Amino acid sequence: MTDTASLDAVQRWMQSVILRPTGEDPGHTITASSRQSARERLMVHQQGYRLRLLECMRSLHPGSAQLLGREIFDGFALDYLDAHPSRSPVLAGLSAGFAGHLARTRPDAAPGAEREGWIDLLIDLIRCERAFTDVLDAPGTEDGTSPVPPLRLLRVCAPVHAYLAAVHRGEDPEPPPPRPVRLALTRRNFTVVTRELSPAAYERLCAASPPAPISEESP
Image 1 (cartoon, rainbow, N blue to C red):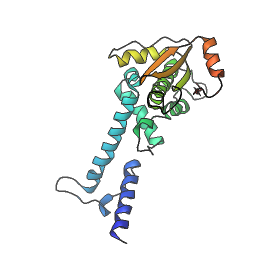
Image 2: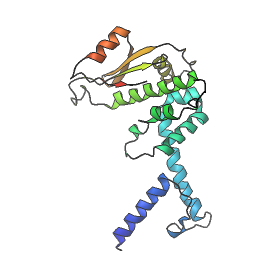
Image 3: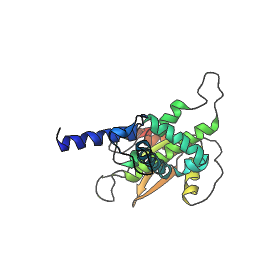
Image 4: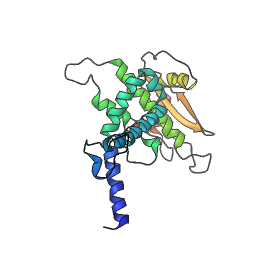
């Protein structure tokens, strides 16, 4: 085996045990130091990687982290990351499946369980935060990468956009009361603009034909 091939194998192994820890003894590749065993040295990298992903999840979902508190949010985020390991070097898309994961694994989904409104609120807040990131990063008219501004349409169970805006301002708002809300998120001069729509205006936008950049995420 050449040195290059050997290094490539080590890199692939290191990546695999950081992404999915197996509990194996890493002594065949990592040496112990005077203060740490080989396993402890590997755990530094494993824990550091997870903490970095958690930090990214919190930055992508500041409203959800505030709504739940850091400890509970981190638990949900780690469960998601364990089920959907990151496969992209671009961290902006890390939470793309977060809302869907929570919808599939919600704790009140057991037969006979009473549906809990706070879970609906959390999922829709995460969907709104995800749409905010997608619109912020999408091609647009500002730099000529698109002839029209990006647009996302959402139906949510509460005015989560107002809650999120208050969090962005550094406030500590109360959870919003439930009511049906229809939202349009777009971008102007690199700033995301969120508007609440009437049912009629929402339906008109949904029915608009291409090339309008319209997408609808199901509740």
